[in-house]
Image (tube, rainbow, N blue to C red; front, side, top):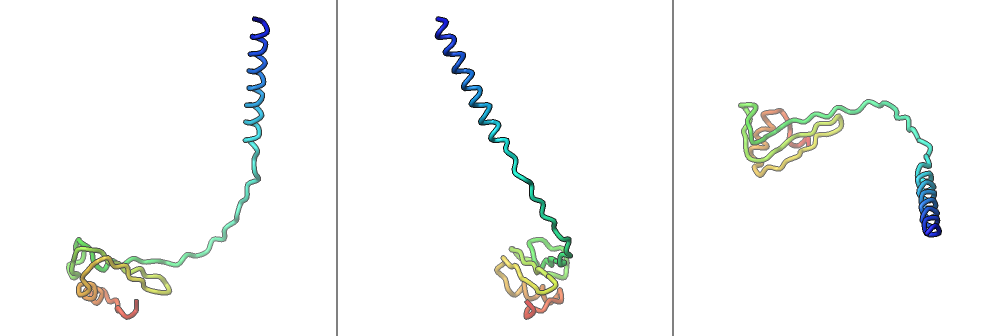
Length: 102
């Protein structure tokens, strides 16, 4: 009976020591690396809604879909998910956007 208890205590102690060592090895810290970022001026980006489902500007026509102009200092980008090019061109002219500039 005493031998069984001593064996059980020995197994528990060895298990505890094994768990303690595994926890200690997981706590190895790696040196932190800080990257100093330079603050650069970011270019200004403007979104111009050409058309949408909802009329915000009464001079523009509405249609199902969405079209916007992404204006950066270097270029104009058209993002268009609509299916009516006539309304797209009409609204672009009303907004003073030349379709050739895209």
